[in-house]
View 1 (cartoon, rainbow, N blue to C red):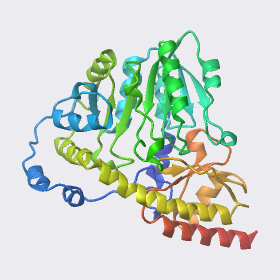
View 2 (cartoon, helix red, strand yellow; view 1 turned 120 degrees about the horizontal axis):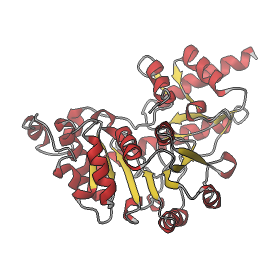
View 3 (cartoon, helix red, strand yellow; view 1 turned 180 degrees about the horizontal axis):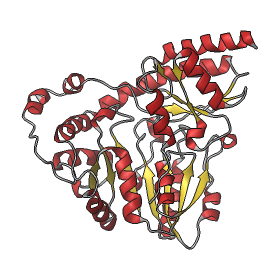
Length: 373
């Protein structure tokens, strides 16, 4: 199996920890261990008693029980905990797909959602979201992409990097279609519970039936990336057992202290999400104002959920713009080419408290280049 470099991760490796402003982060504002433990009386003392031996390979039952609260009728035996979402994506692909299978993948998107399948020898068709349609997916296009050898559909809702949120009727129809065609549906839901209007929140795909797998993580909506805890939820016993078996060849089990802290976080997830949504909504007003005033420089489809948007730079190549900005102003944006998008889009992150200061720096840069031109 051959995998190409992970472009987005290599880009962040170059800049993330030596750039003043990360104006493209996909996660929300994080916190200290002390701040997290302060949400729950007695949690700090319990952490001191956490056992540092091996943990259960499927994740502690207590953590899996708390994760079940995200779903309609799932039990702990339907939850498999991983070291972040990336491991879960990799294990789903490796355990459920075979060489020469065909997969339909929502695009643009996080590279591993398509690249792992390609590396295994699968054929991948991209189900494209288009800016002119406000990043909406076309279900008729999906029907035209599916073939006799199609094994799975991969979607990401809410969507990274556009912030698109599929309407409930379309998500219902997508699940019916997957069931009718006997296809697996891998639903990346790592930005779920970050909808700007809670009434638009979709059910988890795993609650529709055994055809579906839902992916979750603590990194994004809840802002706890350092815990490195993700999971899949599925009623499909074959998928669950296949992924659990393959996990024996990767991480085997998770960090016991991380699982304890994750358990606390899941009990407090509503408070964590509300805290971060407040940051996102404040930042959205800043970005709306910027893109309204600078409409000669940027095109902006306002996101509906999640921690990011995908504007377009109107004055040339987005890669050149992002490269010059980070070098001259210390502000990091993520060019769309990291997603395979070469139409001069770039990712902006909405979940960090210092976004207003980052935008001030960006505007100083824009003023300077306007003078030069």
